[in-house]
Length: 151
Image (tube, rainbow, N blue to C red; front, side):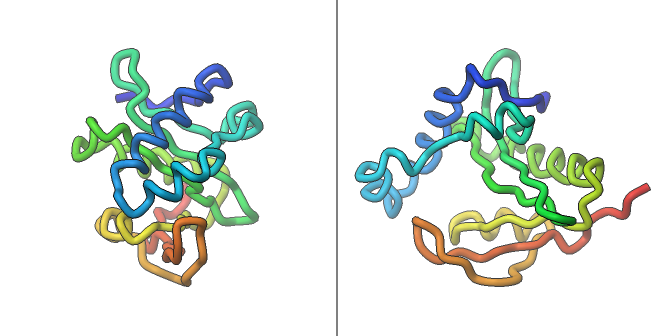
């Protein structure tokens, strides 16, 4: 697997990947089907190299969106193609996000994890810091506790 910057021409395909991943969960289906605009990969984020694509051979199998907000790197989205779940793609994207956050001078990495993703992030060293309301319901803001020191 390689992780590379997303390209503007991939926007629709990445949105489709995100939709497929979210539609796997029954509790999100009615909201997503009633609000198709809820899924959007920002063209600005692609142009500013804030979208990072996990690729195996020539196939995009996942992506993350990273935003630097002050000294915090916000993992604003992480989605993996459902057929690739359980193969380390998400873990690889988080490791890539941590490395990029360090390069960008961030002091921590945070994400808002819906209840289905909390266990995944907890296994990677994230811990809840606050509750937030999302379009899908309440979710924990989580922070990576063992953020590696900058060298």
